[in-house]
Image (cartoon, rainbow, N blue to C red; front, side):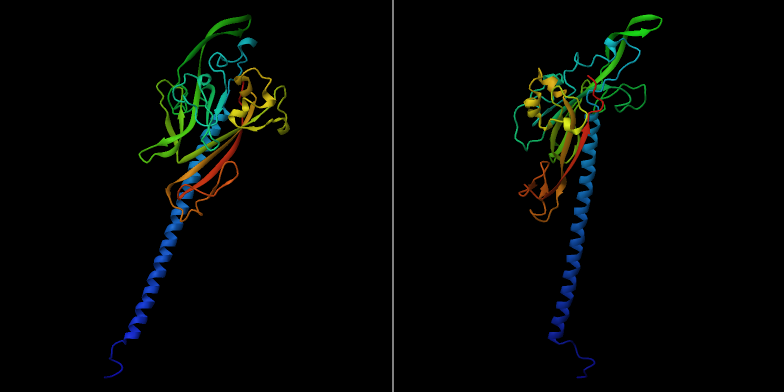
Length: 318
């Protein structure tokens, strides 16, 4: 038979099939690698968005803690609206863990906190005078709102206005005050960990604000009793919530409300979890925790990343 028209030998056929199989395997491996890299990149981008959203919400509210502006047209005794202490005893108050009655307590001074493990997500309650400049309102004529957008109740008081040439004129005024409580809980059909808020608007129920927030850790920069905050050296240290009420530098203060008044800065740290388990191995799922240590035994193959910032309580007026 002519060599030009004969078929492939068995060896040639096997070599061809082997080469073809190697090409297919290499192509599949490249595709799977690109697909895995794409999933990882997408998960990390989503985590960045969730982390920045959670810090943005928390920082904005913490920064407003105790806000209660002066009104220059009033007598000295009535410069600020009667938010403190007639309505709220604390500008902010934290808990190592979740307040036991975080969704049911009538006001921040009624919250109760039980000891928690250091890894438990923390919680915090923040109060301030609310207005159209520091809450979300569709237009200036709409009532100020809480953290979930629920309108706040209007409060009234009688204050002395300075109205020359008369020395003072008792006048009825209206104002709004907000208390927002932040904590971690599960939400949705998949029970994803989320950052929750319970606002103080009438009928406002606790709801998730940012999904995939697995942990919240808070520490508080405090000024010792009798000291004035003029530099970082005046901070007694960054304390957890239980230490704020037990630290020797604050022991001379009369009650917990007075001790929490010495908080000048708050460090916020959140741990964000990927929506799905995308890490190829347990080693790849390790992450840096809020305390600076590495979690070497992650519970699953979800990716996790920490995000942190420090907030100065520049608006606090008591």
